[in-house]
Length: 182
Image (cartoon, rainbow, N blue to C red; front, side):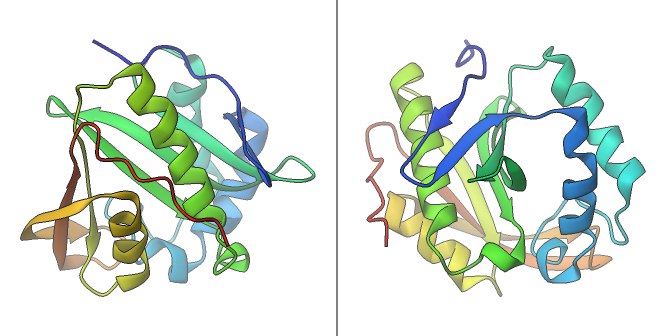
């Protein structure tokens, strides 16, 4: 069972849309910033345009059940990603945002909208996620949306090139709380 095709989601301030190959430069610019990539498990550092294209080609081909939304603000400029991916039989939430857009409530707005759509299409499915232990802002966002901690583990961070403590979280079916947008 999959959530269906990716379609545009519009919020008060954002447009969440399918990715395009033309997003490669913006993705590379954001993910070449270690302040962003250090909080992501599967993104290498350094990160360049070819890395972005290697990720974008299968994402834009449309053959995967996953959702990979481009977060855009105002001028259609790519500023981040919200994804819901099927991994090892479980649905996982992931997200990142260009650091020049941090602390404006954009990520709460984007993640809330994507999870709202996902929970309407897949109402009986739990969503898993997690954060590195040194990322309290991300944990706070998840808790605000209804995620609860389920455990702790060590996972490898490609950007940091080391094992990192990871707080595991889960959003139970029906537990989504709409974020209060600042």
